[in-house]
Length: 381
Image 1 (tube, one colour):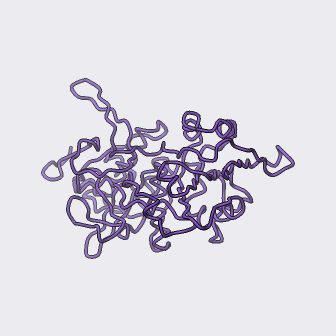
Image 2 (cartoon, rainbow, N blue to C red):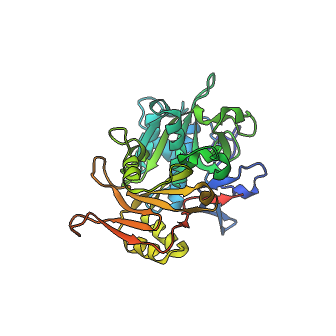
């Protein structure tokens, strides 16, 4: 039974479109079945509820929302009630009334729910690196738990489930040259916060914080990310950009294989996806026949990192010219982790050592540009 004197709203599914003051942007949503008077209805939403303050606190609710989303999307993950989330918590003191969770306890509960979580601490990254992490994980369609800390206030936890609209690259990067990252085009993240109606904003800049309507926090208030990776996602974001020796594998591949113009801004968009979803998208959306065939015929691991590079005007038109596919199931210190590289009209396939005496096979593509992959998140205007 639940104490209903305060914070009375329990398990809820709200479509973003029905809320008047919701943000526009990109969301991780899933079809959630509900029963009303014996009739099953389906709504596309991200799970949300309020904390009761006794059995559950903000961390419990953020965990419940995240685990519930994955259980609705993938049968591999079991549904958990708030009580079950609390019961999984390993603690040497009483669990009720709850005094909240530590970061390590949040990770431990996710591990017991069949995830393979990793922690990213703001203090161990530069502001630019951490902002890129915040964006890249959710751009990959992976909701995660964020710990928030604001001076003079109690710590808080929310589930990050999306990001705001993408600004014009041509306008934003008009005075820049070289590689620029797409995270700079996004002004806020979208969170499920038990203190507010769902789909609140976490602003990139502190000057955008209003303390009203859920706009209470900014990126700098996020102290830790707890990311619930799947078992086989070994190569993480830091391995791409920083690597074991702080020169990431992405930097090496870019300098070795891509012919990028240096006098114009090149927008880089990085995300993780399943090879099944990636192949399905390009089987239907590819504008280049031989690119599509090479992608569909290429054997791939379960998960891949996709890195797209586009001129600013191409990015605004949802196109790209260059692309790198990296094996997300690879471990650190491997000599070569890329699967294939699109360098304009040149397609470089990384052949397994026992398949061919040559390390790479090069094909010529009929089209220089290709359509951006857009299957991880749902756009809501």
